[in-house]
Image (cartoon, rainbow, N blue to C red; front, side, top):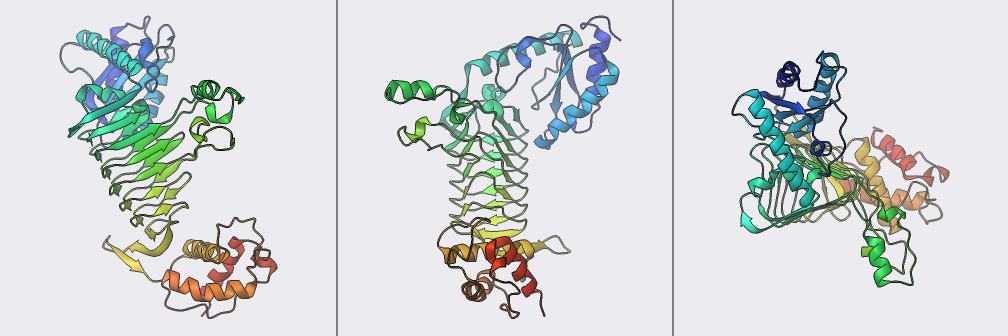
Length: 425
């Protein structure tokens, strides 16, 4: 379509196309010949670009940070028909980033200048540490973030390592004395081991020393209290309008401790499992949530709880480890009310909790309950006493448990049996 990548008509067409995509700021898009520093917004590292490639910057309206990837996909799909012979990189920018003054050529020149300044900032600042009290991080450092939505605030003092991998939606509020560690590079640890423990042999290719690509996504309207702490080697995602009190701890990974001859601090971290907190959750003061956990929408986590297992939507949990106390379900008017009898998932989870209490330690699905002393009579008595009390059921298990000793080999089978007993008239 265009003979050169500087063709004004092509650049103008790209800008018009991008500005028409729903969810993006109308009329705010700039297309320029691609420059090296825009290829990797997370690392800030300059890289080679293909001759003739184009960079297209579009400002997000700032409503839902999770929709930026979809907006970029829609633009790329339309670009395939508009300029099939061009490699186009689409980047969704925070509100207010693009220049608005001057004619198209002047705006493109100013955009390239800003991209160059941003690349220098990201290459020189691998961490954001602000020690003074303030209502927000300094404006010049906002380019360090992967996304920073409209009217969002990170109150200082704050410490963020790897801000280029942190995305904030609009109207987000993070409290003071927070710390976020996006742990992507452990390559320096083998050198420390050789320096301080020369007798020990470590491999730079060991699992704990490999590079990671962590990310933290915080949805629109989410508010975290003071002294929060997050650490990630994988992905932590908070939905929209999540609220927490002070001292929230979130981690999608663990410290490795396999080698007893080397301090844990020098062994690196695991690859991690995604940690997700869905929309509308409320977490009380001093809550901890560990790797691989998903907390369902509108769940409530009591103060001081340690969440080690998935929490169903509308559940109220408390304790260390956290256990289901009761459920909330939306009524016809959209408010929340207590539900007297839990669903199957709650029963299965409660059975596991009761059995772990009886066994004295966590159980896996491979545990032989008979070898642990959890015979049918023992389990039956524990469930008969503990399960109705724990869940607040109106009645006990009036029907006999329709299971044999062999059926008790897994908690899952027992959960199904108890659920059937609960539904027996």
